Length: 276
Image (tube, rainbow, N blue to C red; front, side):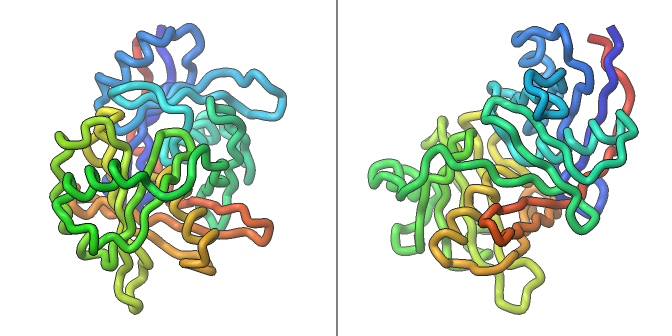
């Protein structure tokens, strides 16, 4: 049956330089196997499937698939799917609530762009020495380059290391064959005069995605870590995707109640129907 479809570019003000997400806007009746097959076929970081909510608190329910499996939560698919849902339903609203496997996620229009409220992390704390050693070896760096490290898992399983500079992050040449099941990122600071505070790269071989062009869930978990530890004390911007020929611009903004909001540009670049 024909189903409405949108492919939304997320996190870049320049079309085709962000992270695309494929959105099936009426996924009622699709089984798990079909959803996974579609996600492998689109071959994007994520493909999402919009379903009726199971609670009156949510506007819709979302299932999120990578080529390698289903995720309980992901950031850029949350923003892209909210954008597509609002556009498809011709709804003018500054707030929507998404239901997904990790729970309810609030999305707001803030400063002209959509932002999602970072969900609670499932796992925090420093990365265990053995696993950290594997990451360091796979990244081809020394332990001395690692300024800090942390589990920042809000569903996908993320861990992150912090390097001194953005250039060190950009220069990484990871051997992901050494960490085939990892969900790991690296962040480093840009010079003080830069428009972006940090450079981020995220690697998800465990989900069938060698490198993600722009990752909202990783930035959410890292933002919570940086604010919690006092490494940052005000909103900041992250650039991501340079090594993949992309130009993501991600905003991380704290509220007075401690909520961290992750936002950026969303734009539908392909729309039509799927014949599933």
